[in-house]
Length: 117
Image (cartoon, rainbow, N blue to C red):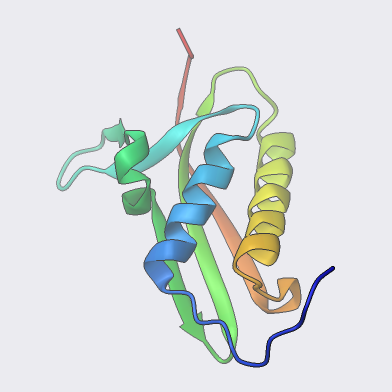
């Protein structure tokens, strides 16, 4: 038995970033979230406690944009992983944060490829 409660739900950009980061990590082919190191051409794979640094959340014109900076596994199909990643993040944000998928734009940036071993 569910009961509807009047009101609005407000979710911070940090929470959106955390949700998106955890959804991304659950996707096949994603090794981790990436952080671009200042002044270097290398990328660091972030620990689970720092996923937020690999996600940029912004709003404009009633649209929510989520930029995911990921490291994917070498040898996987980048297109398939990207499509799965966008779908997973959209579903998670829709279900948990009640974000309207029509007002959500997911951008995926593959910053590096690494083997899991």
